[in-house]
Image (cartoon, rainbow, N blue to C red; front, top):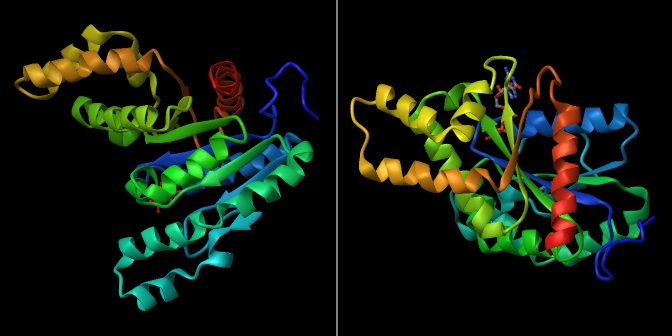
Length: 264
Ligand code: GTP
């Protein structure tokens, strides 16, 4: 039931969590972990898979794009390669997305979160018309938050870290939705270094200088711009494998949902 204090056009629940991240960052494993966590904690979750090309899912999806769109058929029918096939499948699904919203609206009173898995290639969702349509459809109906999954061990070099953050930054400005950075795989590498770099601009610059023999003024300006970006998000360390950080993650989602309710 709704909490009563919210604006007339929005329900407080469910909160939509759109999970995005670079290929291999661990989106699917992370989603599986979120599903296990919600079930164990009696949080009422609903799962939506938007990856038409995934072979097997470790979790059960309540709504699965693969039930509606046959990715291999789409590839054949339109004579497309793998990425074109995924893109076109998502386009086809997006045309019927109002039906997905209706299904969720019907169950809204029984749900706390809707967990959304996106295609492996991040740009297929974040830089496509259908990705924008789907995001918009969610965000105009429910509090919606983006969870950006980061491969922590693979972001330990300052340059890789900066590229990853620039990508996250572009998603923040494109979707204009609250963003939670989920530093994943903390069972392999702790995300402390990332927090330090995000809190202390000079520490990051120093790392940058020692990483490459030279630091361009361009890279310097970029890291300055990122400093502003970091103020607009929440970061948590998680491990999809060990399950560490789940409570902190959901706290960050709750705070982001609050922010959403105040802002939109
Ligand atoms: P695609 O959608 O196929 O691009 O990948 P994805 O982002 O969904 O990643 P996936 O869940 O397939 O995980 C990629 C690899 O990272 C797999 O080998 C996972 O086992 C591994 N992985 C995911 N999360 C963790 C984690 O928290 N810790 C460790 N050690 N490995 C992880």
